[in-house]
Amino acid sequence: MNEDYDVVVIGSGPGGYVAAIRAAQLGLKTACVERRETLGGTCLNIGCIPSKALLHSSELYAEAMNGMNAHGIKLGSVELDLDAMLDHKSKVVKELTQGIEFLFRKNKVTSIYGHGRITGPGAVHVEGNDGTNRDLTTKNIIIATGSDVVPLPGIEVDEKRIVSSTGALALDSVPGHLVVVGAGYIGLELGTVWRRLGAKVTVVEFLDRITPGMDSEVAKQFQRLLSRQGLGFMLGTKVTSVDSSGDRLVVATEPAEGGDPETMKADVVLVAIGRRPYTEDLGLETVGLKTDNHGRIEVDANLATSIDGIYAIGDVIAGPMLAHKAEDEGVFLAERIAGQRPHINYEAIPAVIYTAPEVASVGSTEDDLKQAQISYNVGKFPFSANSRARATGNIDGFVKVLADAETDRLLGVHIIGEDAGTMIAEAALAIEFGASSEDLARTCHAHPTLEEAVKEAALAAHGLPLHI
Ligand code: FAD
Ligand code: NAI
Image (cartoon, rainbow, N blue to C red; front, side):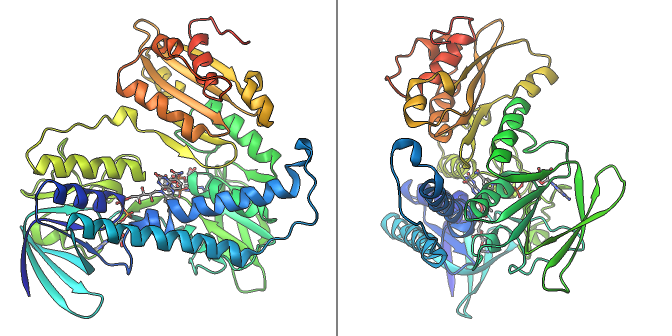
């Protein structure tokens, strides 16, 4: 069967499905090819959504276990029904992935289930999941094939006892001891889930700090708070092997700098040392497209590759591997292909870790500014001095505002605290609009809200906080 399109998107993750919807909305005949049985990519199927469902459920459980006494609420015995918790997660995933199918129908995007392979400029072959073969011709190809787990050499993931995030989202019992390799987004979010449900959790991190890339002052506080919740950390340490021959796993570690090896027993090991672009069997060689030394497809500022009519977005190109970054690139590219002049501000992409407390940031860190020798003012405000945080009892954390010392332009905002992920939106908006820290400080904030801490941190950047 031959079919001709204006746009063929390969991959239906947040980059691909959003690009397809916008392209179709702008009148382009669009198809989206997906090799999974369901739409939505890593994010909806095995990433953002199932992890947030489990983070929320496990937080409710932890609160019910020990968080309500201070509020005068005594509960009887609290029991974990892990099967029901996992069912809830699966139901949410099913509803949302079906939701994308609905959006495709509504916007007249053709969904094609199967492995897409570029066979030449403007040509994509699809080996259907149902055994059929289709050849698509198109004016534009958008590669949105996302990313996959970085393996740890010599350690085979079986998704049962040695797991990636995918297996860690579906363990059928709470492990006695979970060893997490990598203190990044996945290790800390999923480590937190299983800690709350009762596992002993040890996080082994190669570097001498957690969450590289995060403002280091925030990262230190984050580690302190996670340690208080019972997560154990082995920093500056590498895992050299995992022996799975016995009833329990034996994890061998060694100081990163070299030194005496140690072993520990574990029931599950989660490998979470990063993700890498996924371009397997995509046919890049048929059009002469090469990847860089990180396996990423290289694109210019318009997300165009070196081959006419072939573009790439999301995790498969450079930049933060975040769903909202992929989505914004999807919209940008569809609009660009339709002849519009859109814009993306990579300085204003927020990042959130959904632990409790949450950690959220946008713009430069203090470490970035020091390194770039930009002079800045810093304003900080602790949630312990915020009246709403006092009322709810969630007083851990602070807001940190960084502003240019000369112009007062807002350069970065970092929040560790309850609901930080929601609060970062106003900081992203402020940075997007080129606001100063004074703009933020003079904006009226409702009382009593946690957001008042953002205003106070902005006031503190001028040395004039009101409530501390
Ligand atoms: P993907 O979502 O990876 O989608 C790519 C799709 O392409 C896949 O469905 C794949 O099957 C398909 N595909 C690949 N090759 C082919 C082919 N040849 N033919 C057909 N189809 C193909 N980000 C956040 O912003 N917030 C979060 O809370 C968050 N949580 C996460 C939690 C976990 C556990 C993980 C693993 C990731 C999380 N992320 C989160 C990251 C986020 O999932 C990714 O940044 C995002 O999914 C990238 O979108 P994408 O469209 O580039 O690719
Ligand atoms: P990550 O890049 O966030 O963290 C990996 C960690 O592993 C780093 O701290 C790194 O120093 C460490 N590491 C690397 N090699 C190691 C080794 N051999 N031994 C020990 N430690 C090692 O990667 P992660 O957690 O796998 O997540 C992948 C990506 O998925 C994230 O970078 C993020 O882009 C995305 N994600 C986003 C989430 C969110 O937005 N809330 C949640 C989960 C994932």
